[in-house]
Image (cartoon, rainbow, N blue to C red):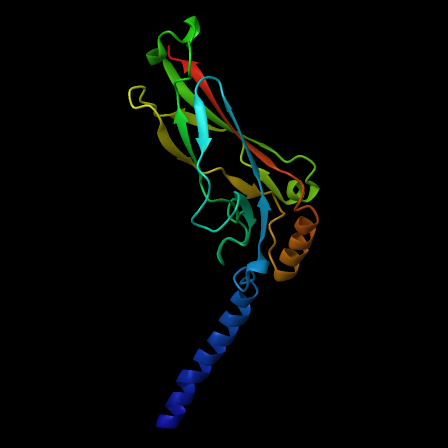
Length: 201
């Protein structure tokens, strides 16, 4: 009687485990080795209407440069194009709003200006990147600048996503994407950080 009870208990559990493993195993295709990811090197360009920008180089992740990483984005995020194309690490920079020398008449009253940042992206000739992913446009905002404090450190997270219908939904499609991206991994892509002064009022 007890043996029959155990059989009735474990057979459904074993069957369930088999189904779960088979069902979810197909999606765990980015966690086996580092080779399961493609990380594009990215050039960072800076522009500043007035002042100085100094990028703080990545150190914690062991990258020599900033990267755009293609991956799955989680077992439950297969259909979500906004998850899985990541800029790493965050864009960290120092901004000094006061340029050396004369500021000129246009900027005599700096307290009457806001400091606006804009992020732009140029894919250049990288056909594969342009096929699978896109930069989330209109990434801009205002920096909280204290003119009396001088240089201040800021952190931004540039956003990317898979193009509609291009996020791999199987291991085979993921491998195909990696092969295509690998063909163009040396083609430059550029992120531009631009800081401008916006007059208040």
